[in-house]
Length: 69
Image (tube, rainbow, N blue to C red; front, side):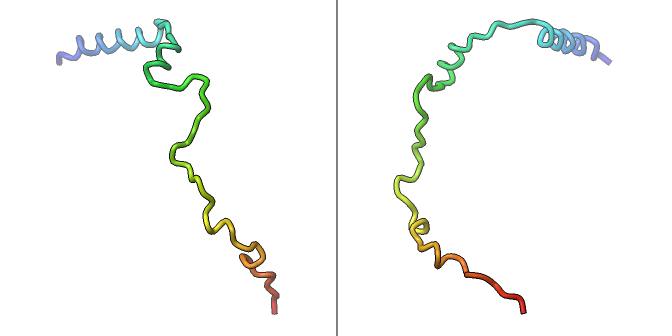
């Protein structure tokens, strides 16, 4: 027993969330989250140099063909 008050409170909150319209200030949200405006994204952790594996000879990488006997 005793869940009547708690259930009524939860129902009230659920109705407020479902039916009330909240005004959302997108600019304030972007400032708060620290989202960049029109800046170009730069990956800080991107490789600056090509990998050694990328410079291999493509003809040596794969065998020519396999023949069935």
